[in-house]
Length: 350
Ligand SMILES: *[C@@H]1O[C@H](CO)[C@@H](O)[C@H](O)[C@H]1NC(C)=O
Picture (cartoon, rainbow, N blue to C red):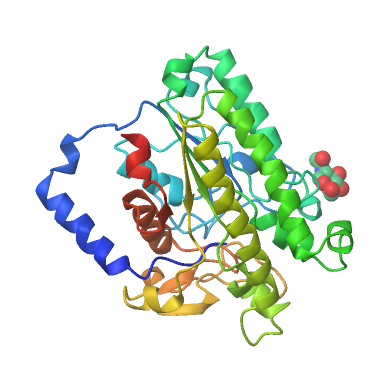
């Protein structure tokens, strides 16, 4: 559901490389006491395994390049929070809320759920899912049960990727949903951002101070949408434009929250402005089809179906989600600030 890195990607890659050479990264240790993850399938790492949903990927070929095999990550290997955890110096990935021990709330929990949205009804076509509101409720229970002190919660990192499903599995569904009938794209984005603001304030009250908000990528260019709304010929501009409106409002929300809550650092992560050429320069040359086999009309990989040989050449793993290669590029660009504004994730954890 994400595509795009900054035009300055080469600069970033060079910077990362130089920094790695100058400071031995192994010696740096964990840069923040804890890391909490919220969002949709882009960030989910197993929460949907225990739900009655069609958005479930705990089978091969998902995880084909991941040490533990299929875990519920919507990719061939690591997802964006995995790479961020590595960059922030964590020794292990942040485990899913489903099955996490109570004490895990001291280190970090991943609450993300495939199909999750800002609106409660989003993705009801897929079955069960954990909306952003429920994820925040789960966080509240987790930190209370473990009695994690506020002083510690204020030093944690929080990343959120939400909103894509409110378009893909709500606003742009056929036949049109009530959201589509009631709202113009501007009004729909307004309604999402209004709710998002309330949820972020709840998170703030629960101690969140270092928060990275991932915007929506060019979802009109995913193979699923190209094949349907795009008529099989190219990106659905109508869908991209609606996502762009949401992103601009999200950026404005970040500015507003930083002004009104000076003790907090909110940042926007731009997954929209980059383009396929940026990836081509990294050898990722295939952007018009999935690496795994997807049955016509579906978006997830066919169980045990054949996959492309060189996963590092593909942007898309299935018809919506990106490969581990792209997830790594996005995570380092977000960590180093190439695609963030006004703070890099590195600045959030230090
Ligand atoms: C799962 O969801 C489907 C469709 O919503 C429903 O028909 C089925 O009974 C559910 N199964 C379980 C075990 O709850």
